[in-house]
Image (cartoon, rainbow, N blue to C red):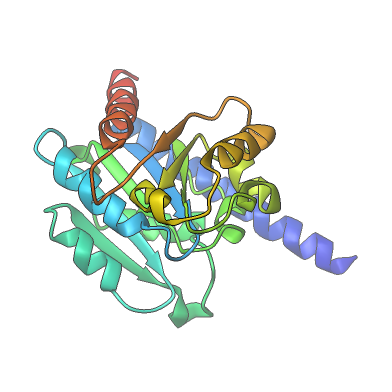
Length: 223
């Protein structure tokens, strides 16, 4: 029973810190997007393409969460966006980014000059979905190599996210994969969730994804 109390206390502290983050981002009119996925979904490459297209029209920054290495942060810095790396190996190898970590990382940016802050969360479909970090929206990236049943196996991730990207669709011709079944499974969990079918290699679906972000950033600026 004590374990339940401890978990509740940890989540309460995180919720309080997330509310503090959310107020700060609202005051600065920064749209914060928390991007989550399992490892190998193509998330970093997708974000590279996203930032390369968006940087000429809006100032963007990224907080990258990883257990070890700065590999993803190094790739995203090439786009010109400001990037802060968070490695959790130094404090126990946490499998998610919590709200207090985002507060510390965001302090490295001049938020008055940023329109879009992307959080590339640590790669797994479980823990990141459980922690509010004060973001405005959550996106889940699911590649077509991962199987159609991931939404029903990891329902919380698809329940808490605002948008889903079915990525690497250029590989569909080589796979025994039913993308319509995946869409059906996502909508079993979250009937209203918009879904973009994307390929970083061919660029298919990126226009729709970028327009979605543009509208969210513009809405945040209006308050």
